[in-house]
Amino acid sequence: MTTTLLTDLTVADICDGFIYNELEGKGLFGWGGKLVIQPEYQRNYIYADGKRDVAVVESLLKGYPLGLIYFVKTEDGHYEVLDGQQRITSFGRYVRGKFAVSDAHGVPQYFSALAADLQRRIIDAKLTVYVCEGGESEIREWFKTINIAGIPLNEQELLNAIHSGPFVTKAKETFSNSANVQMQKWKAYVKGNEKRQEILRTALEWVSKGHVEEYMSAHRHDADIAELRTYFETVIDWADGVFPGMYDEMCGLEWGRLYETYHANAYDPEAVWARVKALYADEFVRNRRGIFEYVLGGEKDTRLLDVRVFDPKETKAVYAKQTADAEKKGVSNCPLCAVGHDANATRIWKFNEMDADHVTPWSKGGATDISNCQMLCKTHNRAKGNR
Ligand SMILES: [Zn+2]
Image (cartoon, rainbow, N blue to C red; front, side, top):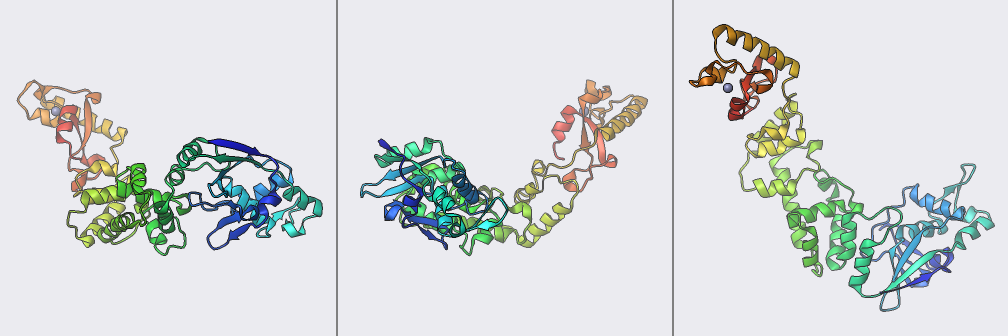
């Protein structure tokens, strides 16, 4: 791979023929049509938040460098922006009058309203551009390791770059597209920002059972994303069917894993939802996100709920009373040892040799308060298990 450093390219050069697609939020072309600003592996434009795009323009007005920009020279003699798309789109939009920047007096100023010397300062600003030429694989490998200015790419954005092709293009049209009418429904179950490829990430994790990179590599040249999309929608539809209601905690659960583990079971959605609501109202349930799997699994694994444990003050009081009673009777202070026939039948355990136990298990409606608390020796408590 060869790299050439360009230091004479100016903002004006890049803005020559700059085209921005407002609908797609993309900077498309510049530099007289020679430059493809957003090739398919690049991120959507996310600087248009009135802060980062403004910061780019302010840097130019102050004469600060914008940092390294990387182009790839393609075989047909065009250039693609490998890194710097966000910065180029920001100044391109400003020069085209798409947004204003407040001056020292707080007055918003569009490019066309700037004093001529300030306009010149922007459009004459020189950029530092590395132009890379080489094999596709070399460039992708290198892109993975360059130190990226601005917002670092997240893992999925990098994978999109490395495995770019028809599959990624189609996948982004579906999963990275805010205008997708399904997006709102999906985001009730999947956490993240579609523009940062986080919905796509989850869809890929589900269908690949966590082997995202292998999956992308295997499907890179696929002309469609049928399997990815069908699987994703199957998981969401299953979750929507089994749980006929919505709580905030349902967003971001591992629905792919839950689907794989439980979808062969039959559920009565109404009964399921009644249990979910009851557990939501249970003050002893500390982990509400665990309720859904707890119910799916037949309400066996209480660890999922992080049920409130007894307070140490309560357990010390129970220990003192239980031990005093046991000593009076000459039996062990562990009620299960006391009814046994070995040497422990009369053993008085120390406080730290015992654990608190729900007399009536929490899962059978027993409360986590002193009236339902007994101390058992550690062996018996472990054997009883069920909270
Ligand atoms: Zn015992």
